Length: 198
Image (cartoon, rainbow, N blue to C red):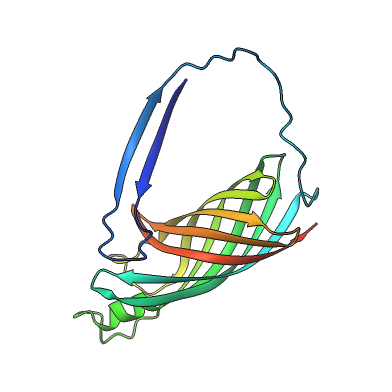
């Protein structure tokens, strides 16, 4: 088999300086099974419905390169609709809004933008995919900010989100999520999610 991956290691912008590293990988290998045997993936826990709607709140405590000793809160929420196409796959569409106080500090202390009272709110729409492994959900989403006043040189309009959620029950999940801007980690958050099904 042949595979290609892209790896990112950093502290998720929770502390600065954030000396992360990005690198591509290419792999070539051979797979051989001594005793081929089909094993069931297990039962789908908690729900059989194809539609799931999530309501989430999340928060993060982060750092900023221009003020590495200071800490700033970012917090917000999202609504996401997931459509399950099989035991392992689902596709998502969602919207989010959050406030990032590090951007408020950064803009207020900038020699060009300091007098412009730039808003620290972000509103984005996202689409993506989920891998469903019983209690665990691994997600990846591509998003675009439909509202942001922070200039492009600081935050790009297009961003990525990678997430992990763990189901506590049918309706409640907890999770971790990373918002990456271009090739840099921007916001690493913890979240609480309530789900309804149809």
